[in-house]
Image 1 (cartoon, helix red, strand yellow):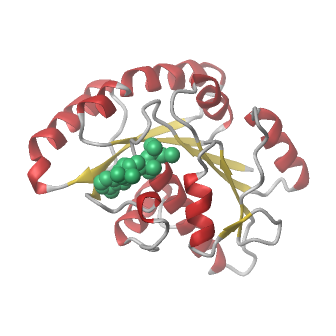
Image 2 (image 1 turned 60 degrees about the horizontal axis):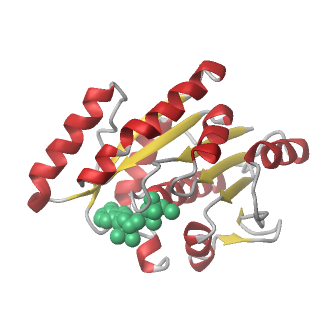
Image 3 (image 1 turned 45 degrees about the vertical axis):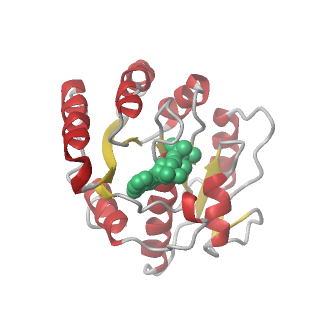
Length: 215
Ligand SMILES: Nc1ncnc2c1ncn2[C@@H]1O[C@H](COP(=O)(O)OP(=O)(O)O)[C@@H](O)[C@H]1O
Ligand SMILES: [Mg+2]
């Protein structure tokens, strides 16, 4: 099983847009293979914006037969348990996890179990500031999961935000976490558009950078 997730303790930092696009891209790449691996999307946010967007894109659904399986999440989700159940059913599953704002507990459960986590950073002071507590949780998890990779991704980049973008780049560089060279431009938001803008070349390029050329 492979597990990937998006996390930033700050809400509205681009987690859902990022992780659902990476899951969508992985699904497309798996479909190009002879024996596509099954993808599960765990949307831990009670607002369900990413699983709703995936469903609006015709990819998600609660049933096992959906292209990307978005299981129903219990009221007080325990990610560890959910992952064990998924792996028991299919050791070859690929799991993408979206996390809610302000839950260090779920973030910690994700980071302890994940292969890679991605930290989106919008060029605004709050998103930058919350990098530090987010990375604190991730670094604690790395003590039990030393193989965990962490990448920061800049989201919402535009010319008229140049100074804020530079401040965000500086803030990430100060933490020592690698920053993806592919930046996501302003207004490439899927959750904000209810899945109307299905495919973004920037997210596909980002996928290639974060996962390599292969699926
Ligand atoms: N590429 C982007 N450019 C500008 N704003 C974005 C972008 N992606 C997301 N956003 C903004 O951030 C808001 C939250 O995005 P979302 O992915 O739902 O973040 P989170 O899951 O962290 O709450 C969106 O409604 C949108 O306003
Ligand atoms: Mg979200």
